[in-house]
Image (cartoon, rainbow, N blue to C red; front, side):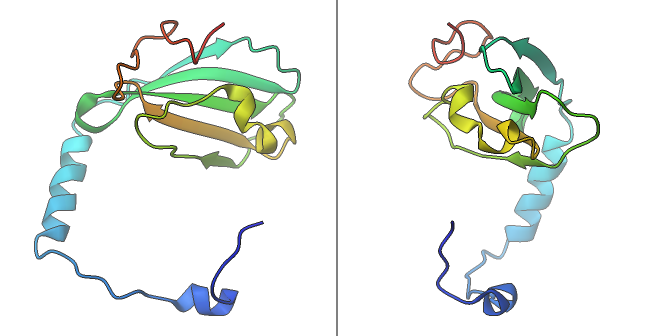
Length: 137
């Protein structure tokens, strides 16, 4: 259960003071326009991790500057309709762990979980499916 410093009504209206660079809007307009020039080129490859209540997919797609991103997609095995999903950004360099470490929502049938990480992460993390010891047995 998350802990917050303020009651919910106050959190909903809270706006922190922030110093925004003068070119902030221009920077993000340019960055998003550049990002839209690259196709996502998504790949979804089923992975057998012996999980009985969850379907696991090794997902690859193009991110900023066309760099390939890798993610786990976990979905409840028995699903009949579109489900809500959580996109969990775990950062660069730490890898995406193993699928069973992100089971709570998908195993309970509550929705999907997409956990991306940089496929070209620091520390020499491999970018091709099947080449990472974190991803395959």
